[in-house]
Amino acid sequence: MQRIRDAGFEDGVFPIHSDARSLPFAAAFFDAIVCIDSFSYYGTDDLYLNYIARFVKPGCQVGIAGAGLVQEIEGAVPNHLTQWWTPDLWCLHSAGWWRRQWERTGILTIDLADTMSDGWQAWLDWQRAVAPDNEVEMKALEDDHGSYLGYTRAVGRRREEVELADPIVYFPAQYTKKPVLRPCALCNTGSDDAAAPQH
Image (cartoon, rainbow, N blue to C red; front, side, top):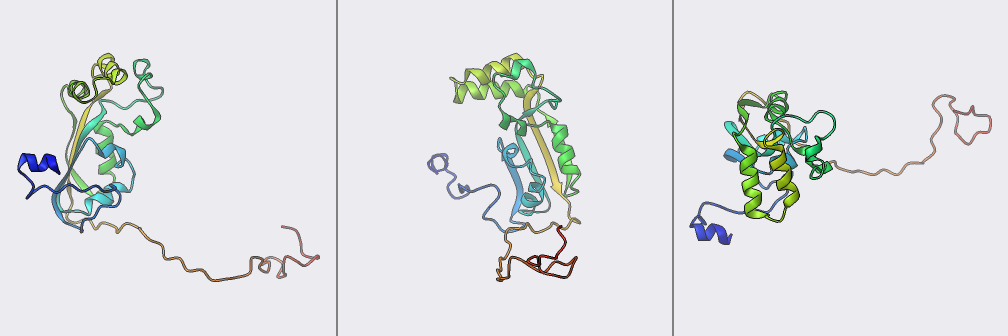
């Protein structure tokens, strides 16, 4: 909040700390949604686009930009990335992957899905600025030189004719006490009957 005040935007920018899967907004609240350097951590869930698209007005845009892949890694992680690569990094994907992920839902018309020119260099510059001790990641970026690592972006427009499903957020639980052992439907006898067949 202090950063926003220092920039003179406290009347128009409102910081909210919230889980991306539990956002405190009404449906069709926004004219646009933009996610910078975060979407890959939650947006790969097949159900998430339906969830987030509900918050943007029909006909308006959802856009993402952030660290990703220039091309998908098929098979083993390339040798020059193994020192840095950890299992959670499989959330990184290429622009082509994002296009397919979004297109198949039918929720958005895709306006753009591409890899930023020299995105790996921007990623490296950012690391040097914010985490200069992170030598492993910086070496991976330098060794890769844009072969796999880069910045991806995708922009889609919510299709007006598509009806979005309400997310399931609650199952009402009603408990009715019943016996644990019930009559056997196959032999029409209770399971305590010694003559009952074993199944």
